[in-house]
Structures are given as structure tokens and as C-alpha cells.
Length: 320
Image (tube, rainbow, N blue to C red; front, side):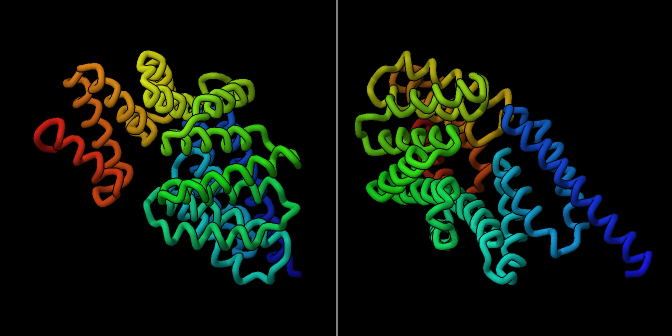
């Protein structure tokens, strides 16, 4: 190896270490709910990762996609995950490659689902499941949860429940992150609400307890559990309790994620429904319009959620 080649390789190693440092700091900030600071570190990694040798880039892109997904920057997560998939598929199959590829496919599938590209999402997620070994319990639970959410979004509720309970069973039997157990409980609460079935409140409160203990009460993930709890309580006619939970969630989402975030829109829709039920028509219309504006910005005009909400706004006000 020539001196120039040695210097080039050394520079590459240093660049990789720098990117990993950015990713670690971003992941730490994301875990603490410091999303703005976490995004700054993610942007630094994003600006540098493409200067890394292609042989080392795929694994870094998967880590970066995971960070972007945790920061709820789904378009960026999808871009990084897809950029990682192609080079990974060219590498001979072996456990480390399969784990990275499965992670990239799960991220791709989750973002495709959010964009209502359900067939694409299912393809990515089933491919990921086939790559994950039975003994890789946490990763397998992650794929099962993602498949469950896809089932719920496409109306396959029995399949969704089976996937959620499979994931929860994996985690309870073999150990894993308490936060992933909270994910499963959150999803079961949301599914119970969608089906009008009992159990939603119990699951939501259990998720809140786990995440509050682990992350603190003002974390966006706790706010997500509060939002689900609010929806469940509203469906049971417990309007005051539901409004309290939803307002607490809304405050956290606005403070940590920004006023134009998707989760803000979800809370506003649920609060608008409560306003309408309690005769506050003008307040309900204001919330519906704010939610529609956010969803159009985040999802685009052709998304099914946007179309459904636009119809509601048209019904309540005589036109969008």
C-alpha cells in the first residue's frame, strides 16, 4: 500500500468514526425527547455519510435512517433506508448483512404505510420477516409490530391483533426493551379503539406508565400514549377526561415536535370531535381546519386521510 493509499484509508476511518459520533449523539437526544438537537446531529451525519467509501456506507445509512425515523422525519428516513437496501442486496447473505437489510426494509415499509402505499409496505415488511432469525427476538418483534400496524390501517383487525400479541409474547418471554413492550400496548389500545372493543384504556395506561417511568412525563412518546388514551375515553363518553389527556398530549407535541407536525393534527381532530359533541361548533371547525392544513402539508392532497378530513371540513362549514 502506498503512503497516499494509507492516508486515504486513514481519512476514511476517521470520517466513519465522526459519523458514528454524530449518530450516537443524535440517538441520545432523540431518546431524551430533545428532537431539535437530535435533528442537528442527524443533519451533520447526513451531510457527511455520502463521502464514505460505498463498502462502509450501507450500515451507516441504516443507522441514519433509524435516527431520522425516531425523529419523525419520515421522508428522510425512507431516502436513507432505500439508499442502503440496494448495496446490501448485492452483498452475499450472512447474519450481519441480513440484520442490516431487515432494519432497512422495516423502515422502508413503515414509511410506505404512512404514505398509504400499502402493497409496497407489505412487500418490504414480509421480506424483512423472512430475513430475521427466530432467535433474534427484539428484531422479530419490531417486524411483527410493523405488520400489525399495516393490518390495522388496511382494516385487517384480527391479523393486526395477532401480530401485536405475537410481538408482546416474544418480548415478555425472551426479554427486550420496555419501550417496545409499550409500543405493543399502545398499538393494542389503538386497535381496541378502532374496533370499539374493551381493553383500550388498560393498554394505554400501561404504556403511559412504562414510558413515563423510562423517558419522563413530557416525552413525545408519552404524549402519543396520552393521545390514544384520549381517543379511547372519548369513545366511552368520558369527555372531560378525554379532553384533559388530549390537551396534555397536544402541548407536548407542539413543544417538542413543532406546531405543524402530524401528531398535532391528530390531536386537533380528536379535540374537534369533542368540541362538536359539546356544542362548541366554532371551536370544532377551527380545529378541523388547522388539522387539515397540517395534513395537507405533511401528507399531500391525494392522501386518504386528507380526503376524509377535507370532507368533514366541507360538511361542518359548507366548503373547504
